[in-house]
Length: 362
Image (cartoon, rainbow, N blue to C red):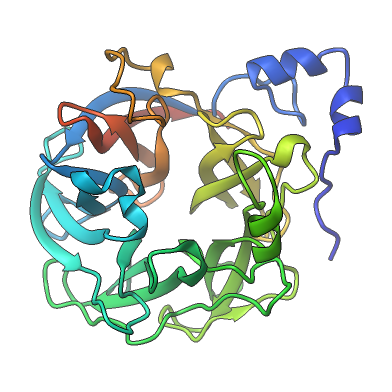
């Protein structure tokens, strides 16, 4: 199957006389007349923060009780921003609605120590329900470094109940030298149009990561693995990687993908890592899950929506929404709320941030 075309630097310069303007304003290469973000959003605010903790990875789901249950990751403030890699745990919070303040309820998964595959961190929660079972995809690592990041899967019959914890990872990296030999992380999950269950994952190549120069090393791409059951086993498809920006200028890439289906298309929202800039969100679509559109802007930087005082110097990612997640309306069809993590807040760490989605650009 043919891969989607990737733009080179020469393509970028020759696209049109509007090319420079597109780079400045963040317009899509495929439709320079469309500069509006896909999501029109209205800030609800920092609805969840914890003293002495960084909060990240906010995955919401409607509960049978009508409340919103938020599966999130947190780590101690004294570890600094890098604590996600060597001390994160996954917890659950609740709110009566997305407009209300969330309250912490329980720790779901904590690092187990020893020789376990998730010994040093539990991170990247993604909660979903299939039939009568809840599935919590997440990432664990064994040595506090990126090269042992692995996707795992915990299951439960209820959101607040006992979670069956995996003894082994769900998805392993590729063989040495492959594009995905470094890790598996950032799970995105959906039932595909072929009846199988699709697990998208982020990875990159170890040699590139260790030897490249610059502020961002390696090029993060997305692959796809499929299974007949949500619990697996998952088999990677031969067309991988399915999302690859490596031919773009300046080592552009993406991360933190979240996938949903709407109007007979698959949609992804992700964090931009240099396609437009490092502060925007990206939006891509596909009819088959393999061939994805060139990215357009999903949402802008935080200062486009809110005004906050200048942060302390240790919050170097202040001003962008990361780990974007969508809460679908109760009709199970319409994206209604955009959840993410953002540095800042009264405890000078990071918090949840929620937007109401007022409409989408179709």
